[in-house]
Structures are given as C-alpha cells and as structure tokens.
Length: 214
Ligand SMILES: [Fe+2]
Ligand SMILES: [Fe+2]
Image (cartoon, rainbow, N blue to C red; front, side, top):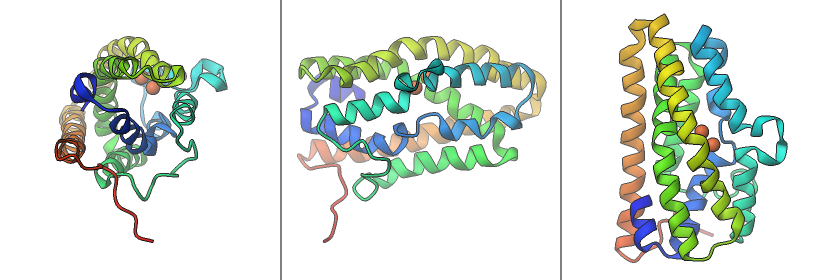
C-alpha cells in the first residue's frame, strides 16, 4: 500500500488509509502491554523500553496515539476512538483482533512478540513512503509528523525488538521459536489481505471504505 501511495496515491486515498488505520493507531501500543506480565528478564525490560517511546516517553502530547489523533484532525477527520468502526475494512479489524488475542493469552506470548517485532521492523520503510506521499500533497504538518516520527523511532525499535525482545525471549524460552514465527506470519497474512482489499478498490477507481446502510 505504501508503495502505491508514495507513487500515485491521491489525497482521498490517503484519508481512507488514515480511516482504516485509526482502528489501531488511536490505541497504539495498548494491546502489546498485555504481554508484559507474561514475559521475563531481558525480553520484558526491552519490550517496556519500546512501549515507553510509543507512550511518548512520559509526555502525553507525544504519545503515538495522540500524534495519530492530531493527524486525523489535521486531515479533517474525527479523532474519536472507533468513530470509523462501521466503515473500516474487516481486514483491518482482524489485525487489531489478532493483537488483542495474542496479548490476552499467556500461551500466545511468543506470537505477540513475533507480531510486535514484525510490525516494528516493517514500519520505518513504509512510514518513509507515507512521508513522501504526504509531502507530495503538501499535507498538514501533523499528518507528516506522525509518519516522520515513526521513521526515526522504529529504526531504533527494530534493533531492540530483534536483539533483546525476540533474542531475549528465545534465549530464555527456546521452545517459543515456532510461536514467534507464527506471530510474524499471521501478521504478514492479515496485512496482505488488507493491502489486497484497499489496492483492489483503488485500482478499480472505487472507495475502500465499507458502505454504511442508513
Ligand atoms: Fe508507534
Ligand atoms: Fe515503534
């Protein structure tokens, strides 16, 4: 999606992208907190360090969920949590449900770590493409800022996730390797489905939003 948006995305498509992503980004990092008591040692400490950044490093106005709310407002959209639940793609809801399910079950802690690692590792390059797309449209600064912030933050988060969270977890509990891989692959599968839906709609000149019956 980010490749198409960077190359030829319209402002309307970018706003639709924000609408789908709002289901997660307005509560960014929350589902991953559930795994904290289910981890130990190095993996736990490192995951909390990443989460500290997601929550703005002690500054409410810098929380990534707040940055996304600012982005929505700047784009003329509602910053209210779940405001777009009815029009967001089911494929997007599935991604958020996956995070919640992984986070809420101790037996799926390896999958949650795999999911979180996959997300952090893929974010920086795709965020950079979104910056390109938004600058092309001279988008309001808060829209650019959310993604620019992720280019920088996730370059660091990627290293911590690889080395200390996944590395630490598997050193401590090597039997969880298959679960970590499952979390990565499940994320990839669901992100692929969302991309298919959005790209299919856009290539056909249609909206990717779900029609609402009144
Ligand atoms: Fe973030
Ligand atoms: Fe991050």
